[in-house]
Image (spheres, rainbow, N blue to C red):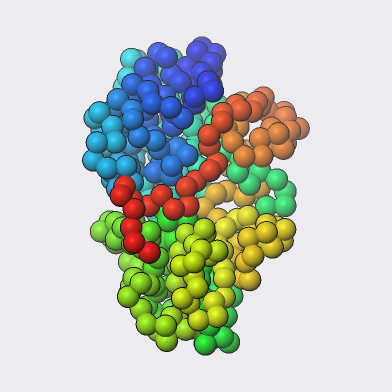
Length: 344
């Protein structure tokens, strides 16, 4: 069996005609297998959605209870057979509930990674290496310049800034799903037990993480805080809020942004960020290459990001490789936290 006989790349996503499903389709389909809850991978309007329980819950929070005709929760390590094709969900280490999907038939195994990272994260199940024949990988940070480094060291810089500027608020821009909760957990790991304030768009998903057993400590709505309480304190908000009128109520704020893109000075300057924090929920250049090599796959499909560079590296190592050129991935919605929105 050729890989294309099992999974067929299309402009709308990867399709398994034999099994009657798509993986992370970019348009409504009859049956969708979803890797995680970010809006570039998880869309409303499908007939049936199969995903981890956490991803289904997150989609309900974001889109409402009727986001799909029907749903089926799949646990890590669990397999489902569709039209003679077996699909198994494995941890991806990206955000809470994120999964790689291994698709197997007639001795051929293809793993669709979704988004993933290969470093520890206290807010989600660690990445699991899945041997396969074909590996479908992201390449968000698929250039040699992107090496993320130690997130604990970045958090230490943030906490140090609050200590030397106790009169200034510290606003940290972070995606509402995954990044915000990871940053909070890293702050707590560093021993910072003061209240952390939240933009309204952060509250629902942080509450959900806590309901799943993730300890985030003392979290408070920023809208209820007095100005003197915000001085020297850390407040998390969507990146867009850093430039919004919402931020003007904070005393002389230090603006920070937690993102892998902060590795490049030009991106930090463009975002008007005073304190760039290189913290990413995606594999960096070294992580991508190490993961590809460890899967044992002889063929690599690259779905989004810096496709050409990673394809070139794969071919230089004697692997068959191709970009999939699927439009619609890689633009995680930084404010899309809840179905009906939340007050700031």
